[in-house]
Length: 179
Image 1 (cartoon, rainbow, N blue to C red):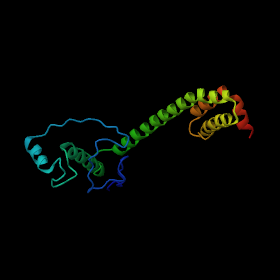
Image 2: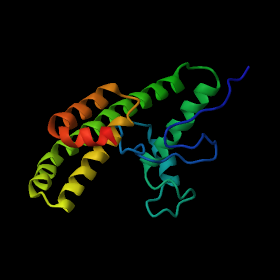
Image 3: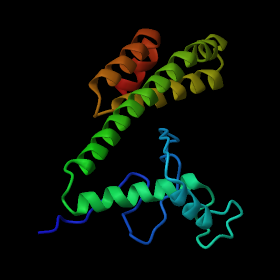
Image 4: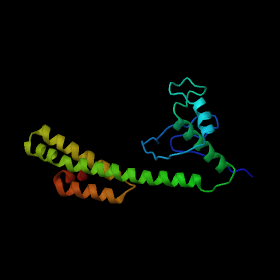
């Protein structure tokens, strides 16, 4: 019995035998390098297909690397479809899941630094004391507060943001929480 064909990679909507997979990196710009040596007759055959000006028999193949990347994706799919290797799709999903977790923490770390960098700006606005400056300081703190309160997926980051806000802007947080 053939395995269900739901082969999917992050940057591909879904696998297609007629599609050319020539991208050198994923959607986030990540890539790895593979060096390949081939017999001269294979090199010559590929050379007859590849044209850097895109005017060869297959315009998608502008470099030998384009050809090799496409061949790798198709062969991986063939091996998976034939049931000759197990776990390719699971390994890809696991890799993508780990990337997503790291990306999430990088994004939240960056957001955390935004909050920390906003402290002197908000303090300066509070120091001005004008109604417009006070309103702007409250607006900024409220935006950070709303973001923190809506973080249902990470108690760690929610606590980190909330403790920073409560420690640095207790009066504004009290006003927000009493609204």
